[in-house]
Image (tube, rainbow, N blue to C red):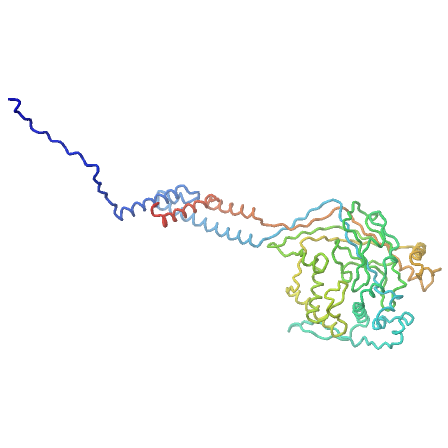
Length: 526
């Protein structure tokens, strides 16, 4: 019966239990190292095939060993030459070389300051106000001496004075007291020292006055007078006068433009034992700067018309790492004048004298006025020793004063020409003009020319013209010879010539560096 028939049971696979954890197989240390090594090789292969450094792809991709060696030698040789040239470029750049460019221009030019000094610092009629030592040294006639000095017997022996000199031979340099000096030289030195020791008011009073000296004056075609000048007291030449021309522009050139003056030298006031000639000292300098008429400028002869043609040269120097120049505002604040190399050296030497000799050389600036003035032979010799030592040390390269050239400088190059002036007929007209300014002048008593007065009368006047030869000027400017732009260009040219590299090529080394950092400090990124 079918109802009692049973079919054999069918086999069924058991269903997997998805809730059971699947066992994991951990990689061995060798597998991890092999994987990292493979990744490193893959990166360096990428670098060698894609780098922009010429030669490296050839070394990597060359099919033969001999080609790999050849390209390796080429690359190393080119890299060596490149490094040598880069070192030379860096050396040259760090020397900060400069070049000088010269340009010519044409424009209205600033008129310079003109300082004039009578070559006679002491008027004969005023010498009686000086000290008795100075009056006796000047050997004044008795009628021109003061009463208290006229009765004093002159006991001054000029032959006893000595001077300290530096002498050099094979064994070195040494000081030596030198005697037997020329009496005229000793007298001039003594007069300069004695005059410097006088009070400022006395020194001004005994000197010449521009009010009586200046007979005619015109500046750029306009009349001028003594009020257009500032008084300047020179240690050597007494009263000097500087034209105030700041802001004045010259728009014309030639002798009929610029400054024109007729000067009365007052030759009758010259002291016979002191004078050696008649003339005017002239210094042309930049506005505001300090003149030194005793050692700068030139002498204009009396009884002549002298024309001074100028040419402007502007100089701009590089300071800082390119060289030494000075435009110190500290100097101007301390001494009251703009910086010049000459002024810096003069003031520095005065300070050296104060430090060594414990006295100061007198001058018009009245610097360190609390220190006593050098006023005897011992102190004057000390002053000479300081000056001589300073000159010798400067010759050896020792710069005690650290006075460099100014960063911006105006130089007025000059050329002189002259002619005999005035004629005898015109001299009488000038004398009458001088008498109207100073009625008590000895010029008012002259009638006829004779042997006694012809020299004084003809040598009492001069005419001076100062003008620009042309409105062309010369500009000398220091510029960097090897600036940053050229330096970078040369670096790029050198790298591109030898290994074909650029700035972006250097970024490939940064990529390598970052990969090494990840390799060392970020194990999970390996």
